Amino acid sequence: MSAPRLILFDCDSTLSSIEGIDELGRLRGAAIFAEVEAMTTAAMEGRIPVESVFGRRLEIIRPNASQVAEIGRMYVATAEPTAVQTLAELRQRGWTPMIVSGGFRNAIRPLADHLGIARVEAVDLHFAVDGTYTGFDETYPSTRSGGKPEIVQRLRAELRPAAVVMVGDGVSDLEAKTAADLFVGFGRYVTRDRVRREADHFINSLADLPGLLARWA
Image 1: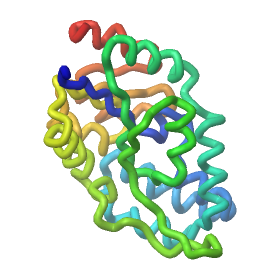
Image 2 (image 1 turned 180 degrees about the vertical axis):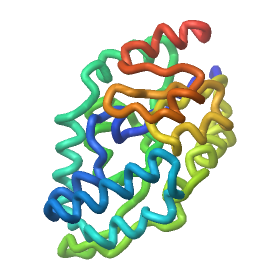
Image 3 (image 1 turned 60 degrees about the vertical axis):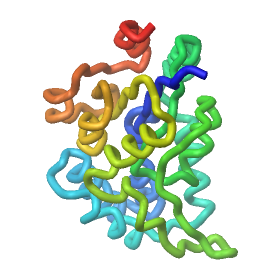
């Protein structure tokens, strides 16, 4: 069996137009949304470490299971418009898509199913039987700065891929450039200056990916 070629996608503001954590904040009202959104933006631009806001945002929101399910439906409704066709083309060319996210596996799974992506590397949220929030997996790498390259290295050790490409909009995605063969910055929904400057390539539509990856055909 030949070694796989992995193409790893961020979820928020990449495969979908929304930031799931911010939308959870919005469900709690304008003031909480504004507070959470400011923290998310600062972390995604690399101005503060991810770990300094990850748990704080969740404690402010304390989302319940039904709210997280609502975000799952929103992810599907706001999927990047070329994603389905692009992923189909990439699979035909021998690529295996996965999601590597600092978001929440519980919410991302419906989008992954919609896009036909089997594997989701993301943070698990925990709920009581009645659906109330009880915490999150604090040990998961993407809850902290430098976590995504760690996930990429784990995938390399497990799957021994022939190539690894990372696609994303944030500085946390850019960090994975050190562990991937190629980093593609994504700017359809938000353009972060550092990501645009330091990416190997920068695109505004996922439909541009097959052409960029032609050298592995």
